[in-house]
Image (cartoon, rainbow, N blue to C red; front, side, top):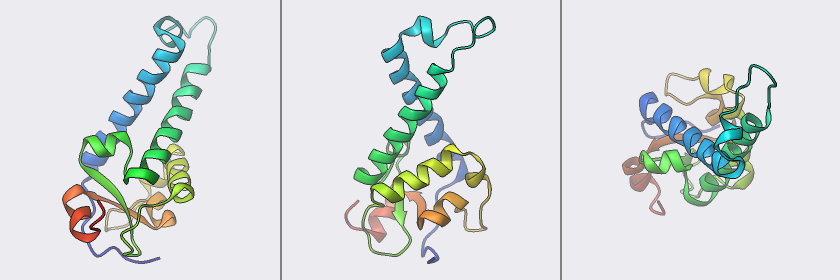
Length: 142
């Protein structure tokens, strides 16, 4: 695994991107299921569908957009990009983006990180999350 030759994005921006992604995924599920089912009282008869569907939408949205445009909706909105650490300048690719997203959804891998700021999900996928400006300077396709 190659060390990135640039500084990774701040944790604050990455968390903001994750929150934007989760709200966007929740909004899609609200549109699909309707607000009454999404916000239904869970104390009497728990319905796991809204939560599971939100997670599925999050994984699909993040995977597809990362593979095609270098970042999820939240990362694009916060001007972050996911880049390969091999220096090729290419996008992550569908399988790499899927593996990375599943690790993010598992929660623990992003919390285990190196001093350079890359979480376990980035290390295993051979990626780094950087600002758009950094991505443009290191990979002209962004």
